[in-house]
Length: 134
Image 1 (cartoon, rainbow, N blue to C red):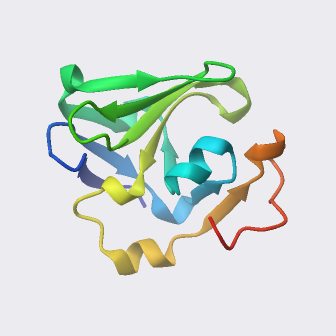
Image 2 (spheres, one colour):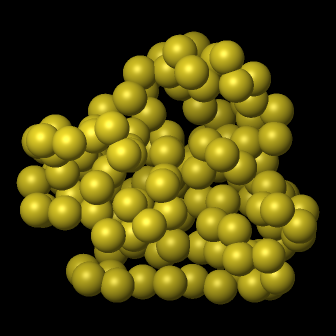
Image 3 (tube, rainbow, N blue to C red):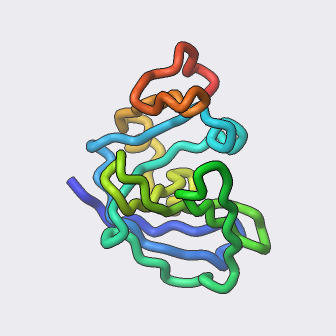
């Protein structure tokens, strides 16, 4: 069931709301950026995301295929979400950094299903051999 969560960067300049169904699953990936960030995300459709504040306080980092925009706060450096377009995952998306949800009960997050993706080898549909560090 979708729930509306509020989220922000560390300093609070970037704030958002997102409608997320955690029972539908969350994701962790072993690609270079996700590994370095220890990212744990939930992918939603753009219509389920509302940026409330901070559009002018964010910077954008892209790499590789340039299909994803890794948004981060210029002040505190935290990446509360990313967005982009990848046909193989259904087109336009927003990936919420679950650690940036301010009102998510940790026990609810602990129960959310996790799918692991092998982004390091561009085999996103496969589970990596090692996931304990993710």
